[in-house]
Image 1: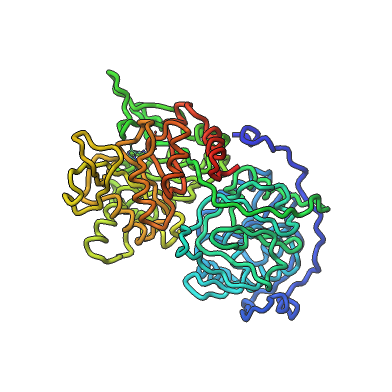
Image 2: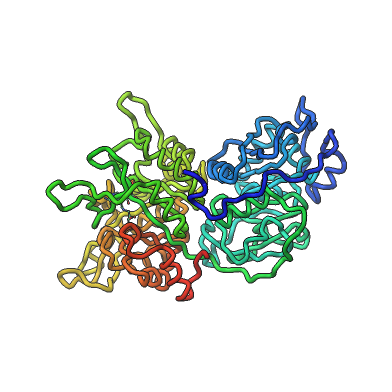
Length: 591
Ligand code: 1PR
């Protein structure tokens, strides 16, 4: 699809910016050592490698990307291409020095990233590149690595260019960690790349952050408030780094990248002091995807998980094409898009190449986070070839997913953990969150309400419900199910949520089979129960039928996001209308 169909801001200036060539020979010399201000970290020169800039082979429309292979940087690639640039990957340290403009989208954990940079001899040359004030944009971990050290699995030394220690958010003050979602920034000084941002929100997903101090003040271009003020971006000359993800921040993020790629020679705007915002509540569009009886991959939607039409043919309800609908919801203002491969529990997802294609095509034009779920588990195919759940998830990430969502397999993992009290580290949940970080792992819970006369009738957490059951029962517990609601398990949603948080889930997608597709509102009792019980973000799902249902769930529970499907597919209420309603009700949303 052409870029022009997805954004109004598609007319870009001619690629290329004035850039004065540095002298031809670089070294991490004494001058460099001064630049590693207060850093005790000494970078060892790598053997057989001299930091020499050869002739600049990049033309004006090429961006050099430092991707050390630790995770998904597909979105960054897509955004760069969307803005009209080609990508040259860094293979050797020389490629860094030869870059005309360098983007470093750090992914994964701080220690692993530093390890790779050191082993490949890139840490030293990266410092030299930055010291020369060459055009640089670090993203997320690409910002954190510029600091002296991090406490992530550490302390671990960083590149030492900026004074300060990167530390974990404090969740004891009620703030959910990871920090996932959209915040507006407080711009501290002229930042050039943030000049267009105004009070608009950008997308963050991280558990660690750098804090402002007198020592690093001169670097800080913006801060954000989440519990306390942390550094959202830094700038010095042509060197920029941002803690948030411009490639996932919709059109405002694309404009930030565009400003980096097409820098203006003059400062056009004065810095504006703005009040920092709260974390915005997210509105998520969900696409349940499956193959219909004709073999086409379609978006479908069930009533209490029944996705078949009640006609003679009994066909799978077809609500449209996944890529088209995802693109539409992005333009309508969805803060995230989720794909759930709802028959993934019985089909092998890597055999389901159309689903991977859906992700690839969607991620080319949709610049907000994409989650994919369904069928994430270990699998042995017909030929006896074994695929670990990590391989399945990796394929989803490579195809453009930012998060994976695990359903059935997380239930089995939680059951085992509650039975033995041992974290084996072998479950899909534990493995994927260890490699990709817990912010990349959502656990999707599919509970069904079971009414009770007496809360002591079950060993699971039971609560008094606001709407009594068919026989006047005042209590209920929420029984977890697997295989798309087909099989009930002996574990409650409350027990499951707490267990998966301990096993490494970064977020909970909380469905409710009773409410799914009914349009009568979210199950407030359930969402309150779970969002009070865990300290990771909870996405409320199932039952939205009017804008008031969204304000109700945000006012009455601690849900961080609300997900809906039918109301959007049936075109009853546009996403923008939901957001306007929330805004009017005083609930912060991404603008
Ligand atoms: O078990 O890891 O293979 O994951 C399967 C995934 O597929 C789970 O996330 C499970 O929730 C989902 N799933 C399985 N069967 C169905 C079905 O509908 N038959 N979809 C299904 C559940 C997702 C809901 C829905 C909301 C909002 N639907 O999130 O989108 O209820 O709907 P509404 O706004 O119209 O009320 P695994």
